[in-house]
Image 1: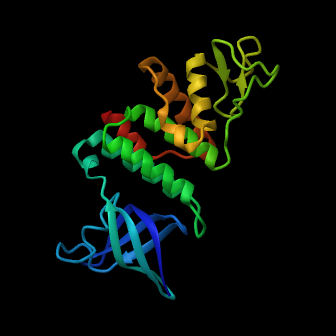
Image 2: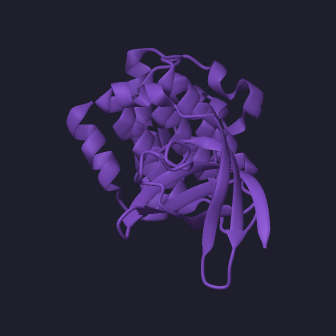
Length: 244
């Protein structure tokens, strides 16, 4: 059976002499794997369109034992990511997060949209990479069922005090008077940024800006919260931290 879907290449594994096994995020079927026959050869028609971060309209042939890429109408390569090792490492971390959390064999339009837009802003220097990392982590946490409770204080319902306290294990927010247990103090600016990331319509998601002090705490809380939720670490994140 042949089918087509918009997709982006998240990971490449070389097999045999010149074949590639692709891990892709597809709009219609989520995470899937497909072979690209002889794609590692420079003259092969699939060579350019099956590189890391390539996005386009892929046509697949689904066999009994495996799925193969038949062709690809390439739309975007995110080539600028290759020019900066920090950007490249961060983008690979985003890819690894998608492999870990995006659905399989079902619609994944929301996940693909988040990844494509974040890579666009990263590749083209449209937003601070640290902000994009926090945005991606916190929004993804909400998408996979771990939306933090940010409406108000867990105990008294107070909407805002400065500072506020957040528990990166439970995702619960507390005011300056209740504080809670196992929490860490964050400025109101940080909490406001978290609320924007979690609650904004997608069209307004990237409109937020934050100063360096806010980014420092925001980056800490979003990373810890996501990693606590999915209970694993990522080699790509470790590498990004060594070079950023």
